[in-house]
Length: 609
Ligand code: ADP
Image (cartoon, rainbow, N blue to C red; front, side, top):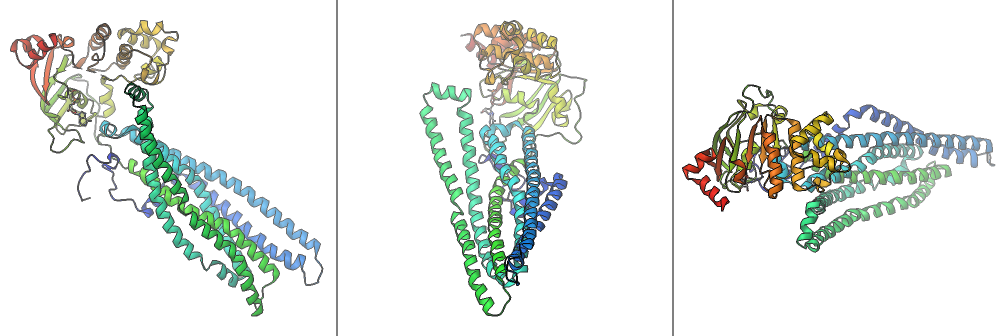
């Protein structure tokens, strides 16, 4: 693939998409039909059903002709009622049979269509779970949600309607066509002579519609992003506290207007086309009467029965034909949505297991080494300096180490490289003696616990939130972890105890309580290495004391890496690394660093003041 390398900045979703060129329809159709492969049996049954009901539907028009020519107006003169009743009964039986088959067939196609979409949704969800952290930091949550909901939802309806519509209508059209030919080939020629024009017009309309559909989905995704950003607890807090509700409504209104405009043009595109088709199909019978008159004058054998039967069939051709044209349009529209879904499925996760990845070794468990690590965020400008510029350090098993330094120096980034939330740009990060890129990610992550700056709790009970770390934990284990994190007494003081439901992101709990629950969660996981990212920075001094006690308890017996803001929390560290602008500029114990009178001692005296 040539032509400009990786895209940066712009539409993040397009990045690293395997198909850099716009997907072509045949390729897309092949891929879409691939989704149906597991349902071959059901589809075969559907096709058989459709064929049978189509075959059945060829017969009644021919019977109509017989009913006229033999029953109503036989050559003997007066109507032959017994023959008429016989013919009509067969017709009714055939209609009932084909209606029943139709219901069966609809059930089959609805089932297949929805199963296919369900499978696609799961695949997309699973694929997104595999994407690296950087993908989520550069893509709006709402945009991701929109692909899962709006786009997959958008094609779901089309798809289940489409299968039955395509098969059913094709066969009905063909059957009608056959009946028409049998009745009179001359009249058939008249009836279909203008069809090619319709097909050409339909293609043009389809292209316009697909373009509008892409725009509509983009706008829908922007709207979802706005909703998701502003109608969340933090979003609404921000909007209210800055009096920005009006501005938010304005933003939504602008996108909403755009959406209305797009929806109207989507629904209107092709309406002239369908109006024309309608007129065209309705005037055909009139033309047929006139042509039939000429045929009869010319000595061709056209009976009254032929004309009645022919116009009946021709009228019945109208709806399936319109249906097919609509399906072709729908397919063009939904191919735009499919392209958006496949674009996400084609994103290649940046961080994956190597084929020969192995589990973390027990020897030296807890030892971490950075070997000349350079790291640049994937989305950073090429000419901006790297975030980490050659970091080398060793953390021994069981040590308590701290990273301190100015905000933005790269401390959090260092900690994220250990569980491979990002991969180094150059150099190596070793975990228990192995390059983290050679380890199975499950095994690596099992050995690392993170308590991050922003505590995230699910909208679920406290017990369920804790069990996220260990689904089969017993109540005793939960309580012991909670005691270790200094939160057990608080939990049992709630009316519902461990069954207390925390609000979205745990908003009903105080910051300190949430953090202690997060610490209990990590204790339950019991990892060899604990990463604490400025866990106490947001707390008042009493809460900080309680949380700090919990952290001290949590760090006992394991390697602990604290990313610290307040130097008071790191005095007891075995090693303190001072990070400035992506480099470790000093290292040592609190006393050593103070007496050397460098960066640390000036930071420390600043904080004391
Ligand atoms: P610290 O923890 O020392 O405050 P961080 O490690 O969070 O610093 O950030 C180091 C630098 O990396 C900062 O300049 C920050 O702007 C940048 N940075 C952090 N996250 C990203 C990201 N996802 N993409 C690009 N740059 C980032």
